[in-house]
Length: 166
Ligand SMILES: [Zn+2]
Image (cartoon, rainbow, N blue to C red):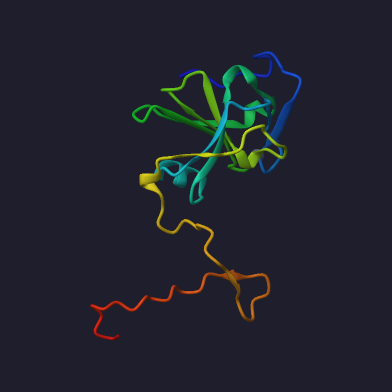
């Protein structure tokens, strides 16, 4: 697997979207528009990024550049799975997700970009691995006594003709 493209790699288009890690050590950019954007519901990405599902922006490697802090980027390679994940060694922000099956692409968490990337995340992958606790937009109500906290009321069970309680 190749290393991420360096600052001088590729040819810049007219428009870029820049992003960076939480501590600010690493800055990166892609040429806009990105190739595509997608939600990854795989258990591996869920664990690696600490979220219900990860939303990535896929960019051609040639349209991706590290602007600052390349020395702060740490890389974990899973040879068996054919993937590599890079993150900031200082603050832990996930930065790159590379897959051997797509060697010309780099996937960058949508969340690290402050600006628009030119693609809406309309694609879902690995839905079979979706966590059953993923928030799916269920109606929420304010939680009494806890300003700013919303909660999902327990679902009312529909009476079943087979249920002796009803
Ligand atoms: Zn950082």
